[in-house]
Length: 137
Image: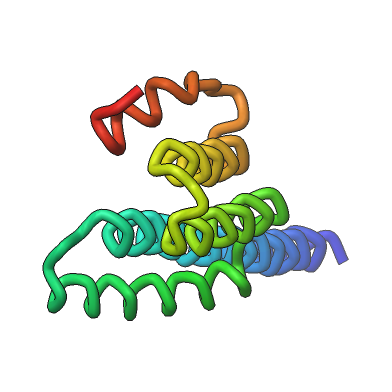
């Protein structure tokens, strides 16, 4: 009987380690998918609104559409809200009813939501994010 207990302990320990490792790998994979979708969205969104080159615009539109779909699946609530707001501002901007600074501000709000979700303790001022992305504060 005493011989079986250590074996049972090793088996249970191995099973638990396997389950925890799989759960961690799944979480890391989902985080990677979400992060890549966020990066692709920002590249596509900013690019489509500030590029003049038609071919590049088409590529960025495709990237933006794909990233938006992935964010719809993996994205956090605050990020989704910020993106929806930015898309509303972008529609107004394209009609001439919103300024470039409003569009930039909406993108900064997206970045802030993404950072808050992934790096909640690191608060960067909006002005710094704007300078980083657009060279404007």
